[in-house]
Every structure is written in structure tokens, then in C-alpha cells.
Length: 114
Length: 114
Image (cartoon, rainbow over all chains, first blue to last red; front, top):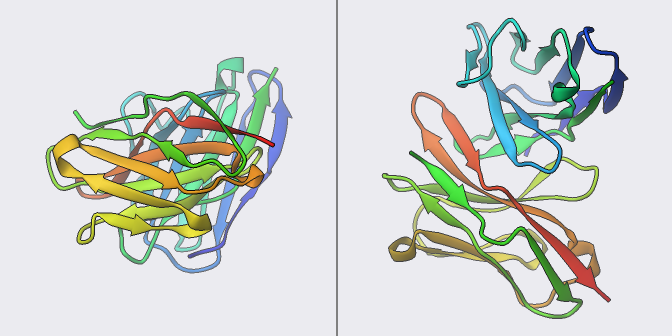
């Protein structure tokens, strides 16, 4: 499976600011995904990022709040904009495996908004 | 609508005891099913997956799971639990529709007593 890294691993931010999270994979992948895991909760898909096209957002998530870039086949960023304490979560990226069904996850970015 | 139910929020077992974590899904088509494990402060690691064929699948770390279509279940088992198995376990169903989307259950937190 692919090796996936995320930066930063954790951060503490002030409300009203923005944070950009990077996801790097060691091989070329078509689909990348961004998930949110709120404290004590399960994972919820934010959006799907396909290289060369606009990200596809799930219901309840909008581009103005969570802009995503996918400049090439090994990299993606998720920005959490105008943050509030409710945005405190773990943000995880994942990539599609060779079988096009399995997803492999990065280590996550732990965000605390004060 | 597609959904995944993990009825047990917390489970505590003694080291060396057997383990079964329950997972029920709701999905109209043939499901792709996954179990992931999240150790404290870590990302998600794939334990095993079921796409088709033999309904008993073997995974890493001595885990196995059995797909039962009649019960819409995909329970995870391990014959002898180790203290290092203490973690949160997520069951997920893959939903296809242009791109593969994972829907996660709420998770089961496993504690292991020495």
C-alpha cells in the first residue's frame, strides 16, 4: 500500500484564522479523499479530490469553508477557513488503492481551535 | 440510505480471551466491506476487506471477519487478544457511484485487561 504523510501532524489555532493541511503520497494515485473525525466520533467524508478537476463535496461541506487543491497525482491540500472551535477535529486524507475500492489513510492532522 | 451500525461502543476483554466485534450494514447492492483499526494518536490501518468469494476473510494481526449476507453482518473476530490490540475499530462499507465512498460505523473502543 502507499505511504501517506500529512503536515502538520497537529496544530493549535485561533478562531477566525485558516489552516492548510498537506497530504503527500509516495506513488501516483487518481483519487484522494479528505475526512473529518470530530472528537469521539467516526469519520465523515468531506470531499473527493481527483487530479485535474474540481473537488466533489459531500452534503454539509462547502468549498468556501474547505477549499481543496490537487495540483498533481501525489499531493493535495485541504484548507480549513475562518476556523471556529467547532472545527476542532482530526482531519485525515486517504488515497484509493490499486483495486479502486480500498482506501489507505494518512496519520491525520489534529487540530484544536481556541 | 446506506449505513453501518456497530452496536457496541465499548468492549473490555481480558488478554488471551477471544474477541468478536459486531458490524451490520445497510446497502442495496453487493457491498464492499472493510475493518480498520485506529490506535491512540494514529491514523487508520486496514485490517481486512471483503469484496466477493469466500465469506471468511483473513486479515493482519490475526484478525478474521465473516460476511453473512442473510444477516447483513460483517463481524470481526480474533481468537486470542493481545494487550496491543487495545484501539478503536471501525467497520466501513464502500459505496460506488462515480467514485468510491466509504461510510463508517461509529466505532468500537476495545480495552484489554492484563
